[in-house]
Image (cartoon, rainbow, N blue to C red; front, side, top):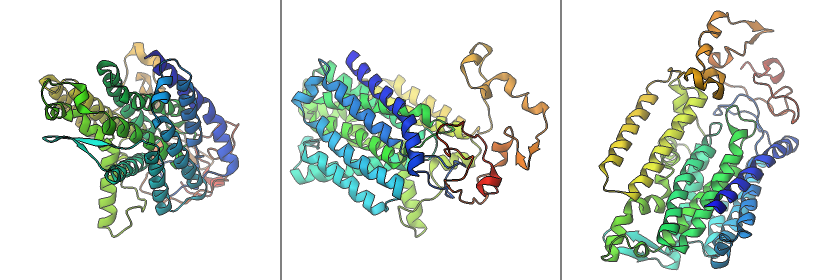
Length: 453
């Protein structure tokens, strides 16, 4: 565990330290697209955050290769090299898309090629645990097609949910934390060495997300872009494929009976790992709903719109930060609920706990205007807007305008998402990301940016 924590910390540190220079590079390179109608942010923000995340991935793999116990993962398996090859390819495609806006079909083809590269190096599904039949061996073509499908679906599910500051990185971090606990339990508790690569992938993925989140939380200074969202989606899919399709369920010996009994016992967690959509159920549901919605309207499934789940949360009155926290809550409930059920599927307390937390989640969805206040002793550790004095301070002052602009205290409430937006050029002065050194503006100068927003 110490070596996993060290690998996680190294990955997070490298990602965090490189994100600042990468932001400056993105500004110089012009990777700051103008604001589109479907975007939630109001200031041009640099992309290419996936560059820092990719180098964090490389640093994590390099550090693990030189550690005493984790070095055996590289000696006994070719999966880390397969992951690095596929990640490098998908990262290059994402960087080009962040800069030049590649066509969606070209990106889809690149995702399939990246998955094929991993399959060629041994990271593929060999068999499936099927309830009632036991482990079903797959042919080479069946394993390849299923692996490619899982990689492509997971990448696009993560990419679709990357619409709010810190949303994709936080949700994937939560999913990878639950995945790490399960994979580590399979490896250490049952002594199955085939689960070691998946455990390493999950630890590195957590480090990538944790290192990037401080720069990406609202208001974000940089976006991960497709170079980051497709990268973390591929790493998450690689871990699920590694432990689902190559760990024999009968090796767990949860039952002293037949292999079919072992498969039945592991269904609560093997099905979520076989289909990563249940671990990242929120982005997966968003992906399916987006495809159905766009197809029903006669649009292309790849056409962008403002109908994603996080957009819906904003429309019913939730703030940006609260919408992100609600998505975090549901991701954690599903991921850790499946993890707890896999440990003890016969416990009624787990089911009752999931039901109770689900009721709390539904209550939060119905209270968009409720602002929580922390106790007095905790006010020093929380943002000012959640302190008790924050509710009365703005009320004592009258909103004022300076030079025709809204005051910072009232600007967020006055800016409605329903108004039409005018694209803001990336090179506008005094706009977020216009300079890499100066302090960023929290309020857009509408006169210089050329927009009424």
